[in-house]
Image (tube, rainbow, N blue to C red):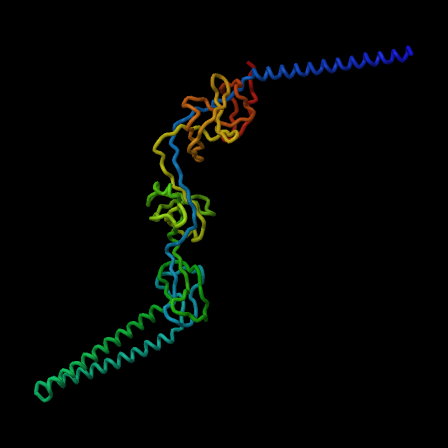
Length: 392
């Protein structure tokens, strides 16, 4: 019994010793953490002069953007003016043609026969007119000698006028038929490129049937639309930057005309951009984006875009005030990606020291100073809080 009691006593003492050691270690660890927190609270973050900026007043031009397909205003559709059979084409799709060039051949046998018929009718009326003139001249001589009555002479004059009118009508009919024959020829009305063939050789063609479509690519138009709240700022002749799909660089264009009324059922108004295309680099149907720059009449208080952060839907910037970090909620306005700046409407004054780059792990109230000689992170990146810090 005595031996068992000593064993229990030793075990109890050992457990108490272990518990005491664990408690001491936990207290030491907690004390170490408290010391680290206290040291961190006294760390002063160092920022370079390039990382801290003051708001600047600059002009921020406004851009109006709209898009649409490119169209060729110089588009002509060649239609047949007389029924017939298409015998052949002299061009294919993509062929370049000049105004007046013959594009194909149509069998116009019916129209040619009408020309022949009306030519014969004209010759007949010419002969009848000549006969009526001779008869009237003879009757005039007889009337002068009082061999015929005045009524007979008047009847002769009426017959002459009738023959003359018939001759004039025959001339007009022949001329009209010849014009129809001339118009029935497949001739290019403009300089351009064959965009599409609507029929094939051997087909029977009816009156006004589409045969070919020609396109002049030297001038293209961008057909887009802008909102009714923006159109008042546009006017014909304004310069426009046009970015055509597939093109490496934007090209210059001008506003051609603005529609006088909004499109039905929308709050948008059509705008046409004229785009010179002398080398025919672009094609009708390509999609393009137009950007119109509107000058800013005022100078606005701005900071770099990289200085703006966002938390819970609110925008903010980090300031250095009296040697401490301060997060300030701001209201922003215009942005210009090209300049890399954003307008500050409220929240920051002119002389404020603003962190130009977003940093992680910043704490409000932490000590901060601006020094020289530190490496500067790339513009617009999110950097960690400066690692180099001096304990103060």
